[in-house]
Length: 413
Image 1 (tube, one colour):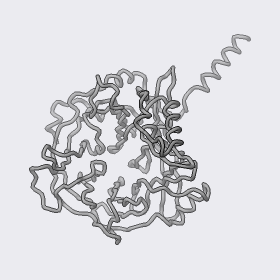
Image 2 (image 1 turned 90 degrees about the vertical axis):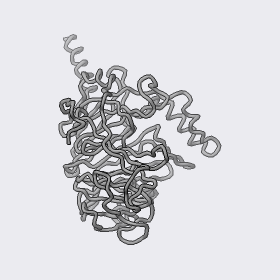
Image 3 (image 1 turned 90 degrees about the horizontal axis):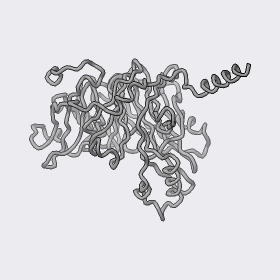
Image 4 (image 1 turned 30 degrees about the vertical axis):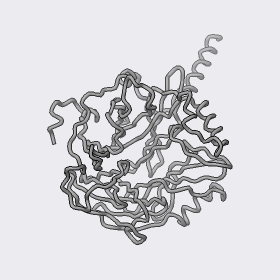
C-alpha cells in the first residue's frame, strides 16, 4: 500500500509537469543538430537591383530604399518603399509601376508607407501615422482608403478594457482578402501597455490575441520600448491562420533546457496549435545597463530596466521571424559580443519549421539577417562600394526547406 501511494504521488507530479497535450515538442535528437548548425553553401547570388551600374528609368532609380520594407508578390514582383512611394520591379529587376504618391487623397500617402501583403496578394499600406491605410488589389489598382482612428467598433473594443486606455498606434496589418483585415493595436494607460491582434470584417471586430506587450516598460512618469527584453512577432499565414511568437513565454528549465513557443491560430475557430523548441540561451552581459544611460531623465525607467535585466538573466530567444509560404524562418537572438568563435557580427542562427506538418526541419547559419524570404529567395538591402543603394536577391539551397540535397540547385530554375 505504501509503495502504491508513492507511485501515485510520482504519477501526479509527472502529469502536472508535462506539457500541454496540444504541444508539438521538438524531438531531442535535433538538439545536436541545433548546436552544430549547417552553414555550407546555403545561398547563391542571383541578381542585384540598383547599385552604380544600372539601367533603369529615372523614376525607378533607387535612392534610399528600406530593407525592412521589401515585399514579394505571387508573381515575384519586388515592392520597395523608396522616396515615400512604393516602387514595383519584376523578378529580373525591371521597373514596372509606381504605387501611390505623397498627399492626403485616395491612394496617396501622408508619410512613408509601410506595405504588407496578404496571402491573396492584396496590399495594405499603412502610413507613418499608423492610423490610416490604403488598400490595393493584387494588380496594384486602388480599392479604398480608411482611417482607423475614430473607428467606432475599434474604439468600443479599446474602451472595453477601461476608459483610461488610449491607442498608441496600429503597428502593422495584413489583408485576408478585399473585405477582411487582421492588424495589431498597441494601447496603454499610465501603468500598463497591451497589444491586441484583431480580425475585422464588414460586420464586426473579433480579438484573436490580447496580451501585455513584451519589451515595454510603462510607469506613471515614463514609457519605453526595448528589444533587448522582448518582442511579439506575428504574421498572417495561408489558410486563414495567424502565427506568433511571444518571447515573454521563453522558459528556462534546469532539467530540459530553454525553449520558445510558436503559436498557430485559426482566424475562424480560434484553435491554437503550439510548437515548442529548444534553444541555447545567451546571458545578459554584466555591463548591459550601461548601454541604456537613461539616468537623470528617466530614473524610474532606468531602475525598472535594471531590475528586468537582473531577473530575466537571458536575452529573448528570437530576434526576428519571417515567413515563406508555410515555412517559418526563426532568427535567434545573438548579442554581437557573444559566440565570437562561432559566427561573425553579420551571421545569424536560424531555426526553420514546416508549419503545415508542424515539423522542425533544422538549424542553419545564414550569412545575413534577411528580413525578406519568399518563394525560395532571400532579399537584402545595402549600398555598394560607391555608396549607391542596391537590393540583392539570393537563391536559397532547397535543403533549407527539407528537400533532398542537390548539387545542381544553383543552376536550376
